[in-house]
Image 1 (cartoon, rainbow, N blue to C red):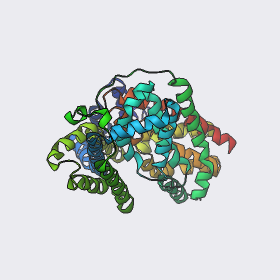
Image 2: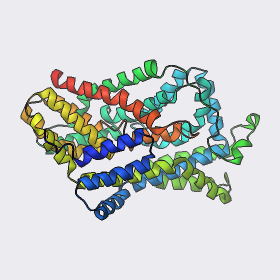
Image 3: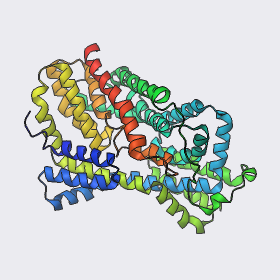
Image 4: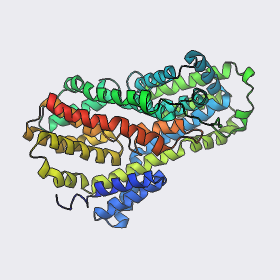
Length: 441
């Protein structure tokens, strides 16, 4: 292998990103430094790199705004006491059975992808109020992070509804355009194999890796004076809580109708302030709390989009494939392994499996056709290369979402408690099962 691989901008920058994150360098700073590295290895001037970086940030502007508004919504729910009421109600239902709680969260995450397609919007609202209950049950939050990642990722791979229909439709469309006739039905008929790999990883995380109790401190979720004024015996469901729930329903309805989560959140917050549930004079404080809760994640998503544009414009993906292409022409299993590794690097850097599909299909479908890999095995390989890295990437919403909820009290590290556990428990089984698929299908 020539040295072009070692000088490839994607290879180098993603390695740098992972090393910096593992060394506990702030994710935002790690992304900026990795972007500069990617630009240098793409032979861009510093000015061109930064211009691409800044212009690319706009791609995730809606997501970032959604996070800030949802953080504000979470602050409102906490301030009104509804969060504690919900926590107490769920505590009665769960009745001290931590696996009941894990099951409920998995089902909610799955529903957020297909039944009620709001993606990670439920996490900053639902998870922070449950942290006290998790502490009481001594649940290892790494188990919860893995469970949420499973619920966010598995459905779009295997279930042809909601985000799954979009993902599988992209797979079918781009594979067909690249010379291999594929329908959505073909995709979900075989992608259960990847879902099985993820299920095995989930079961290992629940029953083996993180089954032991873990102690957390009972720390406040938001540093608000109102939160400390609540008297537990006076926390009863009333009119203002009903209005907050109604506003949440309106937020969901507007989002599903218009496709705009920020618009839904704005209308929901307007209902809350207009009805006097929360005094509009406190809006500044609540938005500040929303930024405190979700601002870091929002900026990570903005910067990740800029990083992705630099990687795409640098031509590193094609060069990465060309560097390993001599090894793709022989053994099917070696070729499959290399394709998966390339997909892992690309998605780890870009942070979106959906955005990886057009790139991977154009590059890898011709290789699958040349090697005589069957259509079902090719679908699994392409789906896996697109999805790999989504769980485990420091810039993916599959990891950023769980962290945003689990770290509401500052006791959950994004890299060591979310990214590494999800990477190990999902990406490794997916790689193994995808290679096996080349033999079986």
